[in-house]
Image 1 (tube, rainbow, N blue to C red):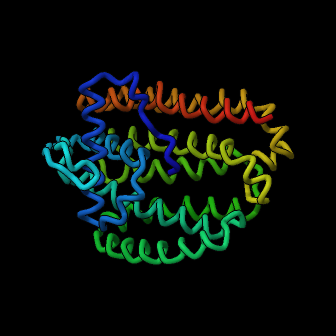
Image 2: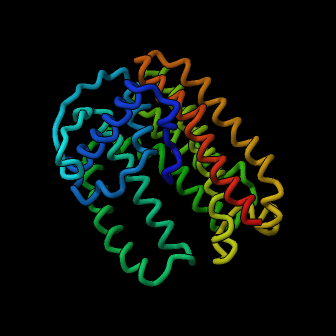
Length: 290
């Protein structure tokens, strides 16, 4: 997860925006409670979306509190109280963040001093992950998720130029995480939403990183497909069109969820506005740097 999965707050009505912020604050508190206060620095909007999706798909009814926090000491903030969906999201964030750190340490673009910072962080998160794995259900979830990470690592190591294959690994890892442990109907829907979002994230992240990857010699499937960053940019319109189909499918699946309408509105905003806005920002930035 790379921080692309956001709402467009300008398009999200007041009460839904407040609910979204309450999930953000609730997830932050859950991270602090269940991992450590330092871990809250890893919080990004991707995991807030994941918490909303899990809450919607599980049928769990969020409860709310109002408190001050160190980040906002002057005004009390409404937050979602710790619950099974938030705890599960925290564990999934541990797994995905740990995997991302491992990938960063393998990346030749990661500088010497950054490596000195990342190594102890990875060690700390590895210990927290082992503690999370004491939860039998989470260990079972990992059994479904990890094979897709391992296949992705294998494909990247082989310098695969099959964009669909690497996107599929990313999608299935997030899909398994989203759908695990839910009833059959909603579990399948959550899996499909996670799958489509995971594929979208991998695609636009490859576009976002194309210049840095070309300079450093890091793996990027688009460079292998098109030969260079400049050539790949000529195809960004068709890549954007293909990636947008993932969002269409995710949005259609979300409409099938039997859940609180407010949660559906948040997800609808992400699919119809937030992710599209992020993609436009990336594609326009790269087009302007030709």
